[in-house]
Picture (cartoon, rainbow, N blue to C red):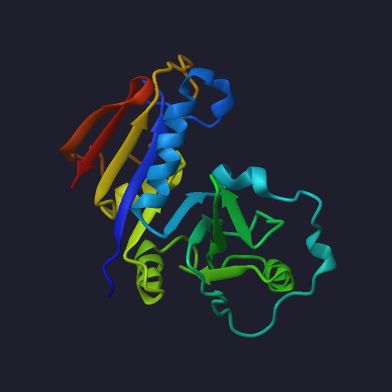
Length: 227
């Protein structure tokens, strides 16, 4: 199996909450820019869970307009210079474009699906010429996912949240490094999400070693941990 390094890279507040609305933190624009720059410095492949990418989805798509895909379910990946992987196990997101244009970088979107997906959804993806791969029968198989990344020539995967997919990778000890960009804001709420969150804590706590600590522009703090 090809070994792919996994870096969990997150942008948080002082109180450890995921920064999901940069506009809501007007004093943290520099921190957000630092986070974005690091994302694309680490490697050519990054990705997020379904909830994180919900804003990209076209809610007007009706699967009843598509015929179910017949035959074996096989991967369809258009090779590119940069990739953005969406962990959408059962196929709930309807992207409008084959690229995710984020922070001035275009990354080809690739769905990470399980074989539980509605076969009409696969027909939709084919019709839109969107790339996809199958990684597991009933649930996400991270071993299969990382192996397929290796086959694409990817040596580093940047995992950018949210809390649930981060927990899945950490649960299986797949995360090699943790990169945190911390802005100088405090969220303060009790219900807001921290960068790791799961109901299954049987394999926690996890421990990492500090590799690097930096104080950067505009009171931004950078923390870098290794396994």
